[in-house]
Image 1 (cartoon, helix red, strand yellow):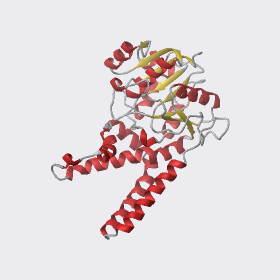
Image 2: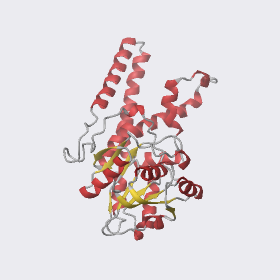
Image 3: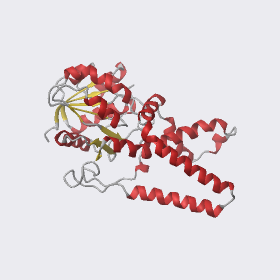
Image 4: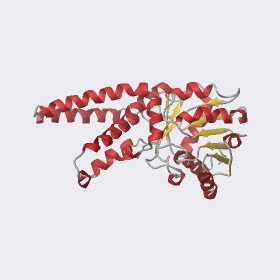
Length: 320
């Protein structure tokens, strides 16, 4: 099969970047893969595994690349792009793995030279682990990846094809809509897990002896990288206001029913919560091609839907 790209550059060889390089190598989506990282250990690891053909600075890795994947923390991306922008060739595409899209779309587009376009991406895959040692070529298999609808259909199609080749089910979203939706489905759950973990400082001594699967399922993402998630949550602070307010109201309602010693009311509340969850799961977009639906609302490849709760999707995307 002819590769989708001649040369791709992965800037940031952490969990996500290392997995992009590994998957790209295994799937043969490019004839040449270059990488860049601040960590010499990460560079050596990628070379030793054969995931990249060469490593260098961000500018050296991006030179002559027709696809550049920014895999650094969100707030580092503008400075990284400023460093490598002069090396970009006309016709190159820049994408990323950031968990917010509107802010990046506004900032990164203005840093590009003429003839180069930015199409944002957000692979919903990862782990609370960090570093290239936890990277895997299978990380994106059957995951969901958002590709930003920025009105550049040819570049968007190529970025979609890239993530599909890596095994992801691609959905298109306008950047602001992506941020609003992911605030509910990813960022707010992390906030709740962090808050509960912080509250455990007040738990009775010995409580750890009585933890089960539910405790582990709920608290796993609270182990995510603090620096990374402080960037994500503050970058998407405007969109986070609505889900956090709604959760606060829901908690007050449930607290009132419990304090009223009203088991039937508590049961009705929990049943309503289950119904709301089922409604969201059923409303996931049906698989279709880019040519069959509006790009901001539809999926782009006919991959069966998977329940996001079955995946570990804490997005630990730090470079180091």
